[in-house]
Image (cartoon, rainbow, N blue to C red):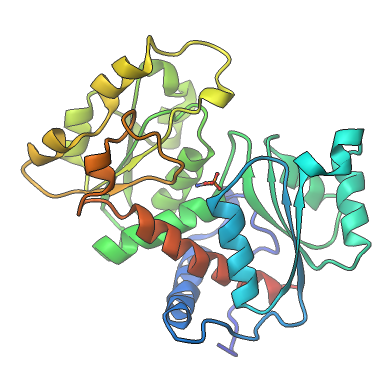
Length: 310
Ligand code: CP
């Protein structure tokens, strides 16, 4: 992997700012890293001279561990920061926190932050590569990249493929990044969920809305099921989780009643028994753990390609 093709951008702030050719380059690079990850020795020296800070101002299991593993597999030096145990609790600003970390000679920042646009703000004030690991309800670009990479493994070229995103679209950064990513790759995207959880602007993005889960599943090749984000909801958007599960949850009898086999995805964390039943999550339809596996290769690709832009 010595002849590095270049991304068109020095940051990954959102899928909105990537070209289709950037996404294809990330996928081709991730294909190579996936092969590396299946070797007995899973490590390459590509980022031996690079120091990366993982700044998490919000909770994470998958994204945080996946980035850290990707960085270590590339031989980068890694420092981890968690806001809950930091001087943010004493009132230090985001910019002061980041500038103090950068003073320790850090080359790249991976950040999750609850405020939409936090990464844009930082990119205007600091000179290192920034990767958005989720900014509030705005974007989660590496999740969308690993989701599309996983769909591509199942279906091949995504041009013309039909993807439905089901659930709490209003509060989901995964939904928005998936919509941008899938459309750039030529896929058709619908969303499905209660009207109160579908943002009004969605049709202006070229996305159709389907309120009937059966019709949505009959239409699609892939259903990406999202969690109800109760922690971001300040209003009551539907009567009860039980009712949500009844009208929008995906269960095995519903899947088995379709006249075709569809792929089931979920970015995690799952609420079993709400948006997905266990017999679906653990079924042969589900590629949920393949998504997690692919996340490491996709994030290795993103880090490797951004390092070439330093
Ligand atoms: N998919 C995802 O972002 O999971 P985490 O919140 O655990 O990182």
